[in-house]
Length: 114
Length: 116
Image 1 (cartoon, one colour):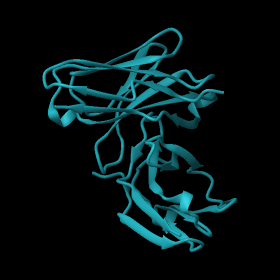
Image 2 (cartoon, helix red, strand yellow):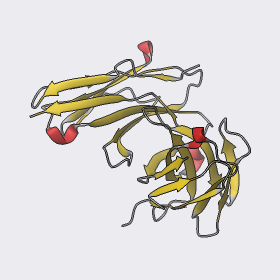
Image 3 (cartoon, chains in turn purple, brown):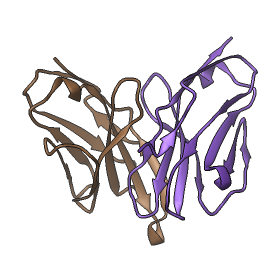
């Protein structure tokens, strides 16, 4: 069963628009970690944010913000005032309890047009 | 501060051959994980090495094996290559705090393997 679902395959926006990426996860563990990674065309996965299951406080970091809601098992990520350099594939990932692996979603391709 | 380094960046092999991919973790990291990313998909966990031993393995056949050296660097070996093994192979390093807290993973740029 898919542990992380990213329903949006592709999103295309014009520069300066906000972009919200959806992520729904599935786990039976009470302790888990959620991540967002960005993968530009170069291939490297770039770490963006991490939250643990005990901290539902939503924060803003620069142009990035996230909305973690355990009640709906969602961990959505927003880019405010998007820029062309934000064009990439974005992955949501889950690490559960004593499990060492990251389970990734299928990714959302974001294209920001000038 | 160098991040995760992988070599080679690109590789072309023939079906049935064997391949070795290499990874040097980020300074201060002691754990190395390997992921396979097929085109258009999310990365899939192959295995993780810690203290020179395989700590966890994903759903991959025994053709996929690995090794971690005392300096924490790692190799991924794939035997009897199949066309379906064509993918981007990503190495990720990490360090684990007290109680197993996951501080997150740093990924390399990957090795693009093409099997023909």
